[in-house]
Amino acid sequence: DAGITQSPRHKVTETGTPVTLRCHQTENHRYMYWYRQDPGHGLRLIHYSYGVKDTDKGEVSDGYSVSRSKTEDFLLTLESATSSQTSVYFCAISEPGITDTQYFGPGTRLTVL
Amino acid sequence: GENVEQHPSTLSVQEGDSAVIKCTYSDSASNYFPWYKQELGKGPQLIIDIRSNVGEKKDQRIAVTLNKTAKHFSLHITETQPEDSAVYFCAAKLGAGSYQLTFGKGTKLSVIP
Picture 1 (spheres, rainbow over the protein chains, first blue to last red):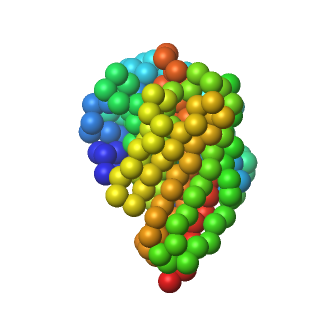
Picture 2: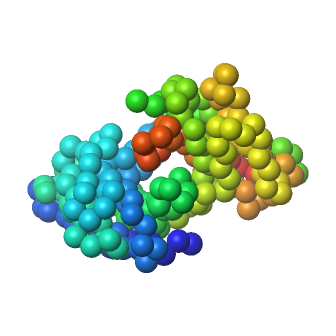
């Protein structure tokens, strides 16, 4: 497996509370991505980063923010969690110019009650 | 943007038989097509990929074919084994300047011993 870890791996929270998910990589890849996976929808891109402090929105970015202060860390924040954000969240990394392949982390299962 | 359709959504085969999963994409500028396997509770793992300048690629029991004219690509698994049971995702990447993948909704493959 590519050197990607996600924390926490499981989280249960209540509606309206802030939540931050962390993705950490040891591969020194420039690009990092956050996806959510829901039954019937496959994998949908939330936000991505193409360098430290460089981020952009994906297909389903509403209600989410991201930050990247170091190459190895990419944080996903739900400012005020809603039940519709109950999902499995995956981080991925890639290094364009060397390969187009994206490598995925193990995922975080988030439940918003 | 790109749109990827994947069929079938579920597939059951007898051990030893072949399995075929098909995907179509909408944007003729797409130039990279990976396939991922996802086992229960894990992140997607790349199993094979193909670029738009190649028509077919094989890796042991797995092969991918690409028809650029028809804008579809397929995953072929021969001599299926119970450990091939998983969810498979296809994806497509737009051409130069884009590093985002658009995923199909997945195919749940069950290999019956």
